[in-house]
Image (cartoon, rainbow, N blue to C red; front, side, top):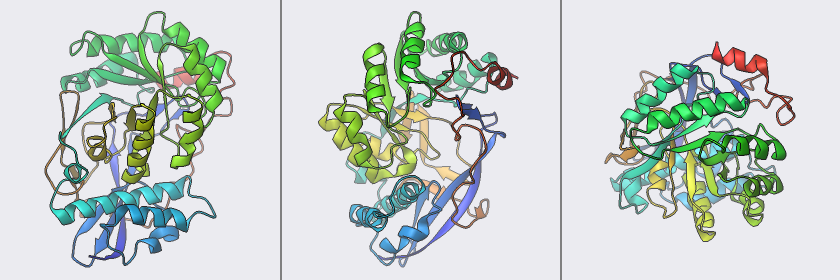
Length: 387
């Protein structure tokens, strides 16, 4: 079997609400979902999910090769970009290709990927995460009632800008999820919006009335000393890692004993997750994938010994995409379809050139100028998202 080419597709996901975090809110409820289809000379296609605008830089590393040699091809892609660097969008492109390669490998064997990777149990425990900072309190409760109906007893709130608001909303989540557990797991994600002393002060105040399981990205992702300082100053665990692009970027955090929950972004690919998981396991640390369309890492999460919980951001699929998984008992139940279990109805999605998402002027993917430099909450932000 040889890789012969690729197709780039774009579809949309309808959140049916605005989504965002402490850094901002997206302007509309529908967002783009990028799909990569790798083709082979035997008629099998492999599916990868995520932006892949830099595919021209690394595709020659896999073209004409047997896709079943996944890890070797992954390293060949990294080697193609080693002089100019593999971070950011290049790493995302490598991740999308890597997903499609694993999909092909499992399809060639006629097995779901979780079996190929050695998992025994198809159930992947998870937590609910609605990217919910734009919702008013009533809408927040309605959203998480839907997750509670699927058995979820853990949830992550987007916050970090207003202490009283976050406290009120965490307590509401605790009440909603209380139907499934006497002690629901509650997490708070600040998305790198604090400085280290602000983080300790904020979380310490919250912990007077709310038992937080973890605080996510309290300070900048590379700030090993700052993360260690926060970790030593609060009761909750510190979770981070979703935006680290490369195994080597975890080393300073692990050496500084700065992280309790090692996170990995879904868009960076399966091989990256497996390697980070092994390194974390060597330190007796759990791993937790951060959600994305298709939950592609769930197959790998089922196969590693130190998986803790998987972020589930939504309960439906993007337009024109079928995913062989269910959400029950507070987690993901993987199906038996070969590969990743992702089927794309190409009549319902758009063919598109392989480009990276355009640079936004604001919103959750743009760091505000005063992030980490606020003494008091930004009243305008709170008013705008509650409207």
